Amino acid sequence: MTNKIYNQASKKYLRKELRSNSPASEKILWNKIRCNQLGIKFRRQYGIGRYIADFYSPQIKLLIELDGDSHY
Image (cartoon, rainbow, N blue to C red; front, top):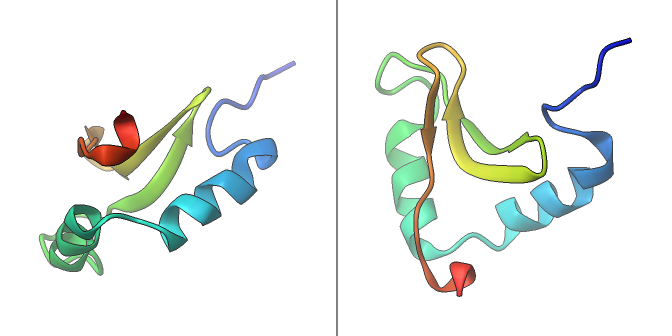
């Protein structure tokens, strides 16, 4: 039996809400890294276990978390 830890269905609504209401800093970065502009595919609001990362690239195993008011 395998436990799915990536993008759990139970947190799908939360991930969608975070994408819809992202702060300005996330929007700016997303416009720079989306659509393979750097030659690397990034995913936005990617679930890993009980956490949701702002950006994640499975290709190079890089996770980016931006700090902001939402973390207070």
